[in-house]
Length: 433
Ligand code: ATP
Ligand code: MG
Image (tube, rainbow, N blue to C red; front, side, top):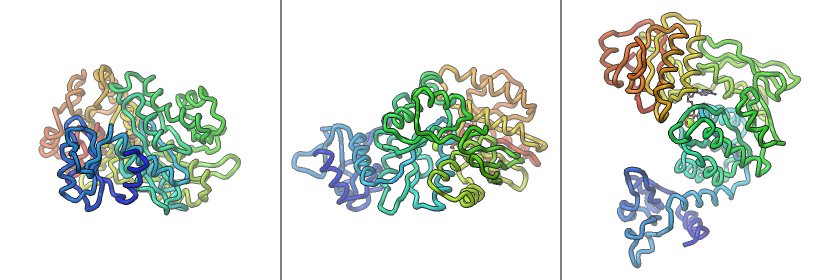
């Protein structure tokens, strides 16, 4: 069956499931494959449970005379192609976002700002991969006026593949840093991969939103000779300029458009690095004609609830919870921000940074050195990678050991930074502190 016919079928059955445990009546099951599962094996069962059709890509699961099992070359590619045809039905601005850190935060802030004026479709949570992005595109409907799509990458070529389906009309890279080095090979590999968004935008004469204060991004944009740029940053050469007023502990900043008055914003986000994310949202908001007052309102009322840059007060301690992910650049930013916070009794519970390949040991040792230089003395390090560092800081094998220590030591009256890769499960700690 060709892709146009499959798309027609989708229009008649506009619910897609990739999980054989959830098979709504009349839906289409797509047999995806992963390292430890093969959706083809569950296709027949999906039909029995209620799906009208199942798209599979292994011949042995097809059945003569059963046209509800549709055999294609690659089910994931078919899924993405269906999503692309769907996306093409909507002639609205589509904002593509990638970068090492701050994609989800920027996406949330941009969506909050644009929602002041428009009906916005945005990536839910962190659904930024090969499966999440097509799922998001398929949620587009006639009511939406703008789409904000987060695109993640862990290998070279990932963004190139995603933009071919998203077809953004404008976009931005939040920053480029040292993460997923196992997959990217090196920092150059990170720049090349994130740069695939710039390549697409340039080739299609799309508008680029550029954080001019970031030398890597400025260089990457200059290399591609962009003509259509809206710039933002901390100097006064840009279209939207921002300055931190303080971080005590929430980011309080001011911003202005060239030639106009400063406007102050008191946010609910911890972390000086969030200024970049805020300015991104402001630049987008202004471009799409959201009034400055509404922009400020959206940013002031945005309260994170996703373990990113969140400040939580428990009965015993104040917590800076950043336990969603960690890589060398976000870890460095979080520690620097914690250093700058003018509060007493600081403590840090930090978990391993994963997927760093051969630089794992070096990068963990760097964190230890940064912690020492920041004057932090009460530090708990969690995981195998931190376990190998040379330091006197307390070390824990895993989060369970930390829980036991919390029960024993019952820390009180501390300001505690909690950060680590998701896999270290430090997000289980706040309720115990
Ligand atoms: P993922 O790759 O997991 O999707 P992401 O790019 O979506 O991550 P966020 O979830 O927004 O990033 O933020 C994750 C963490 O990165 C934050 O909790 C914070 O520590 C850090 N971070 C956020 N924004 C920035 C920034 N502009 N610069 C540096 N670090 C940042
Ligand atoms: Mg994200």
